[in-house]
Length: 104
Length: 438
Image (cartoon, rainbow over all chains, first blue to last red; front, top):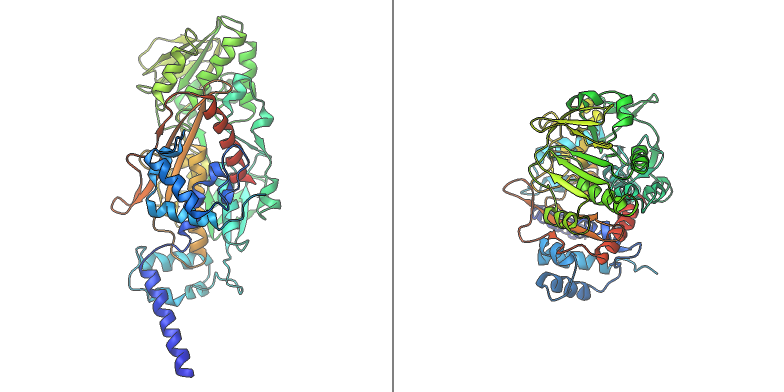
């Protein structure tokens, strides 16, 4: 039993070390999504006039963003901003907003 | 935390990490790296933020939010309320009043637990890590965030280097009493008069702002004083932002009202006769003379020793916004030496603040900061009371250049001014004011 605990601890340490080696920020999705908040509201809850993003289904947001990127969806500004983010970043952003509580 | 040390590679130097983690907690015991962690596993530490504009207020709010209230944040700001520079040209045009631009600091305290001190930071002791307040007393910090905005280089306009002259020839480039005073001057000007706007050589706060101002004053004249003129005398070789869009507005919407002249570098003024003097051009006499003097980071940045670029601006590490010169001091907003293609704008200051907030929360928890920051800019300029145009850009970390660079092929400007973009401009304002202050 004791050996098992030590074994688990070593495994955990290895996992943490590996994560650190990849140098990805554990808060990357949150940080990326925060760049949207100036217009779409803190945590995606808009004050009005621009769409709220909180609680939007991840697949819906990804498809909207991809349509902005390709120009399939007409836009005044999002076709220009969406092109500045990689597909991976957009997926992280969409995932993060999908997990936020939608405004009432 | 000791586990992190066993990580085979870290982009951010381990030595830096140890150094800043230790410095962040301010005691020898901090070398254990876990000293900043609270018993519940959260983050603690003391952050002082100087300046309650778009940069400072956003940093204060987001540090509280992202540390789950663990980090103690004090915001030092002399003004009783936030007054927005973006949208303030609408007050000159007459379609909005000062109340529209004004937002309380109360929600920072009530919703986020930020301690707001109404005072002026006048000095920084970087060894003791304290900030001296004008009203007396010191504040100690583990990390200091300076978002001090700009001050004017009055020595570049010698006749304006006194309070009396500054009350007559206005800048209105910090929203507040000057905004209203300039509106009063425009109201008092007889029809047929000339409003002259002098623009400094870039970099200055809000690149498209002066050209928006020309539109707003013209919008007012067109309705109230149709024989009056707007004369833009630009120290730069051309319009520095959204050039074709502004020029189209001056040629169409404000035909016969706005005249634009490039390469007019102001050297001084004559206050009594409201005359502008230039390096090479003839003097120009105005009925209302509005001078935007050259600018630099505000005085507190100098006191802290973080002014590094051209004796005017503060170089920072764009992964953390920490000064390249002084440890534990971060600088945000218009005061920094910007990265390529990065405007001195309120939107950008808010974005600086979020990168900085994430980094400060991580560093005080003994973790490395996000190695790949992303920022964007969106800037609307109001042409009329309803129509707007925008410029936008996205800035990503470049690991080879070790700075943030604009993404090629992304960003851009409006195709034409529109009421739709005007409605988005007002929605942008409501949202960024809430994102910064509520």
